[in-house]
Amino acid sequence: MTDNPLRLADVGAASQSSRDWSVPIGYAAFYPGWFGRTDFMTWAGSDVDQQERGSKAIRLEDAMSVESILRQKGADVATIAPEASVKRAASWLHAKNVGSLVVTSGNAVVGLISEREIVHAIARYGATATSMPVSEIMRAGVITVSPTETVSHVMSLMTRHRVRHVPVLRDGNLVGIISIGDVVKHRLDDLELENKVLRDAYVVGR
Image 1 (cartoon, helix red, strand yellow):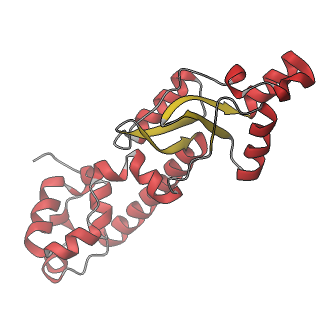
Image 2 (tube, rainbow, N blue to C red; image 1 turned 90 degrees about the vertical axis):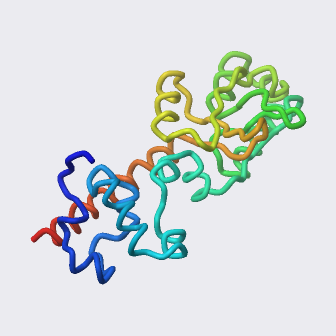
Image 3 (tube, helix red, strand yellow; image 1 turned 180 degrees about the vertical axis):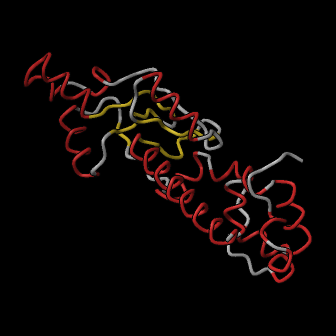
């Protein structure tokens, strides 16, 4: 067992026996390093029934994965065929109010097209760019991730490859898309939770 700034045992034996915790069980699951993973799992196994653990205890891996973002935003993905015109892609971006379309051929992801590619095409080819097929200007060689990837890994990929959208594939099938905005929102939510944990831990420890 490693030393931690705050252990469950330090919060109070009386609260442990009564299950009346000021710091919810979900917080310990998000931040096992603070609360003591071994102590938390021992307490959860002895004092919380199976049904309660299933509804409240969130595995750290799930909380920090791409899957957690998809659960919040949904799995809807705006797609377009490679033979569709650039004008059609621009209209579809506007209609769906999204920043990127996944270019698919059958079930295969073959590229991405965003406002960036469209602007670059118009700057290079002029007005004729709108009648060009999406396949002519799309970004091929798309970076993809699986639902089990961590959010930190996605952030690293976005930074390294300088991309703002990453399709999510499960067993080769498109199941979602993650944007830089999704990642930032997730990080802000984490910081908000972290601040709440610190406030609640301070109140309990007084």
